[in-house]
Amino acid sequence: MLVEHSGLPRREAEYLLLALIDRDRAWYFAHADEPVSESDEVRFRAWVEDHKQGTPIAYLLGRREFWSLDLRVSPAVLIPRPDTELLVDWALTLANEHHCRSVLDLGTGSGAIALALATELPECDITAVDSSARALDVARSNGKRLGLGNVSFHDSDWFSALGESQWPLIVSNPPYIRADDPHLRRGDLPAEPVSALVGGADGLECVRAIITGAPAHLMSGGWLLLEHGWDQGEEVRNLLDEAGFKGAVSRRDLAGHERVTGGQLL
Image 1: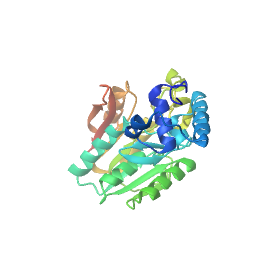
Image 2 (image 1 turned 90 degrees about the horizontal axis):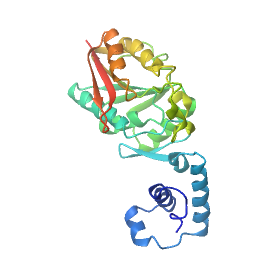
Image 3 (image 1 turned 45 degrees about the vertical axis):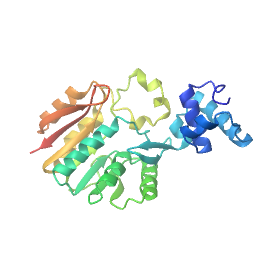
Image 4 (image 1 turned 180 degrees about the vertical axis):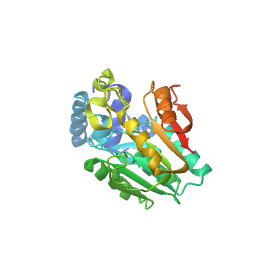
């Protein structure tokens, strides 16, 4: 009855309740009529009200699954999305094809991309950077909890603290939403850090900064992969071409939108 009377879409309410009582959906279907404890009911109702006021479910639970990893999240970091797994998948293909021994992840946030790569590439050293100390705390906590010793996290505004180091593969999911985009007022976005979402007036300020700085930190033949907005693929390809990258190409997400674009520095 808690789910039915919550005022939330049924799937959201079920997800909250199952997370609270630490059960799966199979258990719920078999025991849906069983009452929960009074303390769990109080907490569930509090979560429901918080969610109605705009707190994302991921922040209420303090976690979000990404690449089958149970990641801790907080309002200090962007909530990982399934679309970003397209970037991870492409990065893994390139890392295996080119026998990469190291990868750089720019703007790591919760560490989602870096930790997914570290999990799949145990012989590869993953360097992840972010300019937010609070985000780095979350990322380091995730790395420690997952027991991954091949990933390190550093405080850096893009390439600013990386000296002359170079990598064969650089990846990033930078802020790319336009400052006046109405989507910023919808869904989970109002609760997420603006610094992880907005990429200036046209959404491409951070993308430009990364593309401009990347050649000095890429080995010859290295690749740069960038996630971006659904309608920014052509612009990102043009920016890569102008910066001297070859064969700039975009890959589409499950909705058919260009979502990740990459180019090679020869």
